[in-house]
Length: 628
Image (cartoon, rainbow, N blue to C red):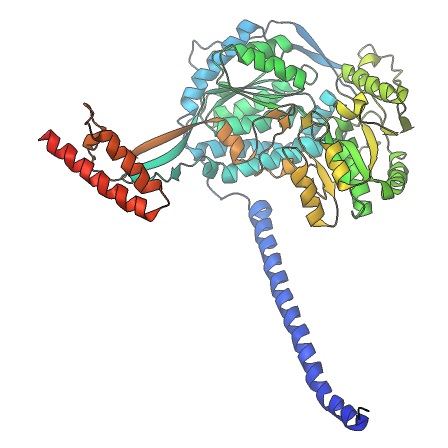
């Protein structure tokens, strides 16, 4: 049997139908292009509006004028003068002696807290408009004095100019902008829904000031760590007493004067914000004081335990941010060049002195060698040295460096001890791997080379998970390159330490990345980038396991510095008398009423509901008759 086909007629039909099919295809393509253009236009409009609101026009105009006269102290006011141990301050990048500070004694800490309590009594009744005005003035000071703040941070910590702009300026400005724009909403009264039994009642949550917040900050970002905590504390209506690090303390007085002068001009007691110099004893006195209503500590797990122990004296609640051992995971389908670039930044920014530092770089084995080669190509070009303390725009001849100094001299020893332990146990140092001797031969009597502290950018391979360096926080410029085979393996490796602060995952397969994120134990996760959870101030910041507990940033941060008070009142201006079965003396049928009421309200069986309703009515009638 043969199938006959008239090819000539078939070709004619195809020719006739071609315009129709072509037109239909063009219509579908055109319609999809039209929809895509509309979506693109909508997205660009949204981005444009956000840029305008957040950058071009970030604050409502005219909202920051307040009517309070300038604050003046009473004649009997006594300013606290510190008389404790002398703290010598050095520039870690040069070893140059830059001045001294005097620590606050236990008694002087108490006096400062007395003044803070007095200042907070006035401040707690301030309006949100007045609080925004103070933060707005601080923000404008930061914007107008960026170079000065960076230069002071560089002298205190030895960080580079770029790192100072990232960590001290950008993050601070975004923190202040966020609180000014959204803080009032975060602390606004929230209305909650009472159960049906209490339909005549209204329920709400109010956020009230706690009192005095004691804050202990580390040395890695001396300006931002202080103002970030201060801004959240005072916007919530509290006073803020900050114990600064003895390793980055020379700028303390200058910054305190700035904050206090702003308060004075706005009509508020400047003792609302105090920055205390001191050693561990000063921090201990702050934690043990009955006048402190909550403590925020940022530092190591070891010191965090001491803070908790001291706070236990008065059962003072604490928020602890205790660092991390963050995994940085590169899957084989990641955008390769992007992952390499971000890994370098994640490890070496601020010389690794960052709680969010990418301390463990996990790379899938089929791209491991390629990734290692790409990392080395850039890492060998990194320039390290004393950061210039002047701003490039001044026209001065400066030599830019990529990596600065290690702020605390003891930290250099900690880093090297961990590195040498790894090398002794089989690890390989591709670059770095030993303490860099200071090249500072300056004969100036104000220079002490023992305070000129550097550790070179280091990359280690051939690591195992029983090595100390894979499990302990390095807090230094050390990249650990570790290969893995499967997603299941890297989840197990990522979760193998006692820390749980943050993680970074790189993949173009978002479902795969999300699955890893869900299974990695951490307080935060960033996909295809590093550290952005901190810059997004609307997100809570904090970890789990020994990385600490409690949150700062976001609405949770402001509420964490507040007394969250539950309030119940009448929904209508008519007082409702309590039903007889709840009154004393208790009627005999009262338990029967409650029993049937529970069944009627909560049972999923209709017949039970009907039966219990009837029984409840009978019991209520019985109670009524008994009263007569």
